[in-house]
Length: 197
Image (cartoon, rainbow, N blue to C red; front, side):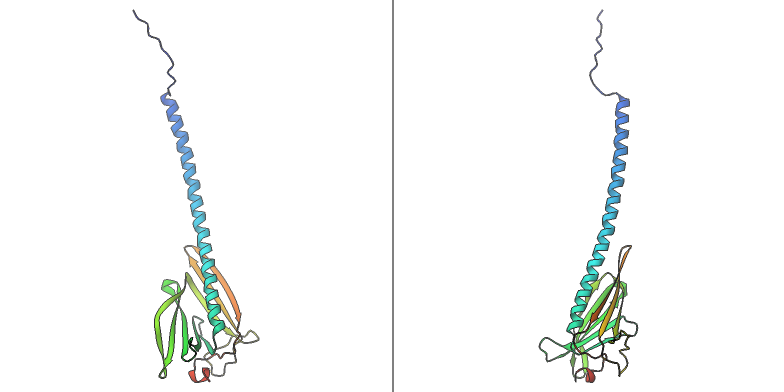
């Protein structure tokens, strides 16, 4: 009769494999949770950075346009529409630029107009000026910081413009305010005869 030699072949038992798979599953679940947390935090900080960038871009562009205005400024009573009056690049055509909030798209839009034959004629299409804007408000102020009503005919000369912008991306919101001191002596009215004297 032959005897069998039982040798240890160095393999893994079924229990060892099951324990190893359980440890790997726990480690994998922890890693997935950590990655999900990191992605969520990245998305939130990315939204906040985008809001700050869009806000600064909006203010820089508005500041440039307002400070270059040569003739007049008008703001609606609710502060949602802004009109700037001046001349085109050649200096021969009267020009108006209208900024307004398009709430359903969260955009500030602008449209340029040229004064021709007694009326304002649109030049080009309405374009997006700033995005991610939930709301905005513009006020025209005198030298003492009092809010001016630009619909009155005897409005004093504006000295400052105050702009508030509320922006939103996802769940994040961002609010910013800027106060600009006007360089040019402009008028606060929409009357063409008064603006271009």
